[in-house]
Image (cartoon, rainbow, N blue to C red; front, side):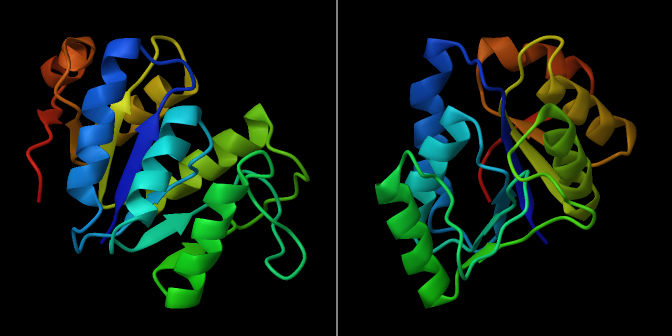
Length: 170
């Protein structure tokens, strides 16, 4: 079982603090958290999660060779924490089948996201910009009957009307 953590690249500033609070609440939960951790908010939540004990699976939207490659080149502190979590056995880096992109692209991100959605037991949405890839993914999750929990924020009210629920914790 795992929770797929999602957030659009562009988020409302008022979403940030509640998202950080949610990440703090998740960091010692037993339910693994999975994601691409590509957007700024997802990456910041990853930093918080890595300070806890929660199992984390990172799925980059590009090819990845753990022996010679690294993630988060612009964020060495995050990469150091990821490597530490890998050494502890609680962080895994997975590459979706068929991933051939050397850099993240919209197409490789969509491929990765669709694959992650197939693997997830639930979706945990922090925020989805209207008309974006994250919105498409959440709509697909709801259509499949996958449980979707949203951050308690007025911008996520539309998802409640479509069948999502407010995240209450595990």
